[in-house]
Image (cartoon, rainbow, N blue to C red; front, top):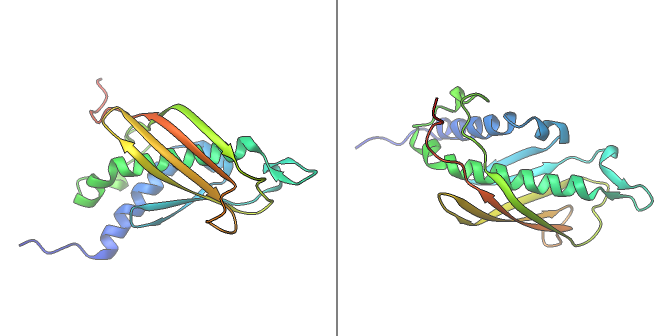
Amino acid sequence: MKRPEPVHIVKGRRDAALRALVDAVPYIAFLGIAFDRRGDEITAILPFRDDLIGNPMLPALHGGATAAFMEVAAIIDLSFQMLWEDIESGTLDASALTPATMPRLPRTIDFTVDYLRAGLPRDAYARARVNRSGRRYASVHVEAWQDNRARPFAQATGHFLMPSREPPAE
């Protein structure tokens, strides 16, 4: 019987795969989004910056920044789940993932945001939940909150075209 891998090896592989996914999307760095991974659950974090304010009179986070943040959270969560089996089995060498070798990301079909209240000038968090994921299509629900997860300031539903798992033809 094969002995299980040490926890630090598995954690390192999961973290490296998430880091490779995030590094492959320059827009994530532009927005300053970070990710906190616990097992297979990922929380996106949008640190507050003054340039994210859309209405300085309130002040409130810009709706476009909120929507982009939530869409990025959905795409990264979907992509991470897509790679999960390979990460866990050890067949994916996360250190070999580069922008050139990275699997293609899901493509947005539509993304609908419900703004429930103004986003305040502070850090925001988002977590995606995949409602359905098949070979070609996925449906994701995302909630964004600030101080209290039970009081989201925005929620969204997105539909995505899933990339083929086959390597691209040359």
